[in-house]
Image (cartoon, rainbow, N blue to C red):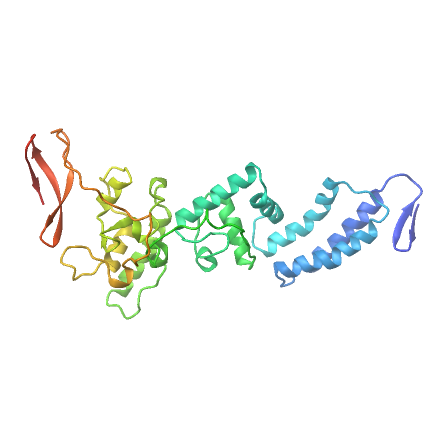
Length: 328
């Protein structure tokens, strides 16, 4: 027999299952009420902290509840919150994400590694946790759960604050990152507007999916020379990053060549003035050190020659110990 006394149910038989059942009913009542309401995550958090917790605290005054039981009871509210945030139910709880990025063990390291990888793949300059909310919401990354969870946080206007951003921020002497250029819409009045806009969409996908070996290509610094004024050829860039120069040119680089290079630069591949580097010193600039071709006749290298005011890109055909011939 169960007796209600001052809002608390007491029974003669040992056990507390009847109190746990009442607590479940309280949670079910609130979640059923909110399920079909148009509410934000912040409003659900308010109802949970101010209304539900107060009721449960009163109901459980005479009951000892284990941590596992608390998690089981609270799962309904967590599921409701995920639904309103458009997050699949199978993802970890938001609180676990916060704990992971602030912990001092392996969870923190692995979580930050994946977020750092996402920052490099997107190519943003500042910390992905605290900056670039508008840009991040436009990006779709597959196979990076932590990034997608962070994206859900930012979509619900959650904010983060880091005490040390030094390890996250990337240094550049250009005002524009590659991703910011790619996300800048083409002027509607441009003569090739439709074609360029289609190329821009393909370029964004190409940049996001670039190989892991090329994740360090984030800024114009990494694809330019001559103090950030002239753009390198794609074959040169692949050689700098230790990759085989053969193969197709990615769509994002083709698009950058089309919109960022001054068409009146007489073959020097000079950037349009607004894309040229500022005078801020940085150790991220790509520098080319001249070196002679090898003496191995089996190696037919690509070389750069300087004729007057123009740079020419050529390939060696034949060579011996003293001279070589090349073609344009």
